Length: 115
Length: 113
Image 1: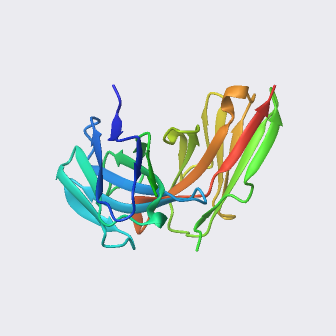
Image 2: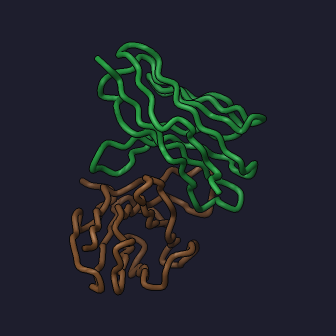
């Protein structure tokens, strides 16, 4: 069983389109994250939710909107896609996000290419 | 402003020898450190971690050393195996970042047979 699963794994889309990436974790964790790995391979936090509550919202364009219907799911919706949005997006989860000492577990990534 | 640095983008080691991957951090509030391994087209997988109250943690072939005064940690892999070839990310959390994990840029390790 995949602990953190995200779909789709690969997505090629045109500029200006709206797309969503879905994420689900079956680990019973309270906290979920979206990370972006850019062209320089840096892993950067975008958003974090703790039990459906937004707790981290880094400087990300408003075109990116996370949605957490329950603590096992965190979806990422991107409006008006731009070429610079091309990247790998990783979903992740951790047991108790507000306490240090946690381990974070990643999904396999979603490769987004905007053409 | 990189708070977690891995100054070696790549490292090549002969099979059977020791691999040493280094990581430096700038934020003294970090109190928990992790290493992740990443193969191409896969997500990072957790390898080993260390709390700031310790200076060493060992798990099989993997040992992480922490030098708090120098704000430096290292991952030792002994003996190195070809399957260890991957990108290794150092990560830190704690303090104001308690619910966040800050990652370094990664070091690509190649273990040569």
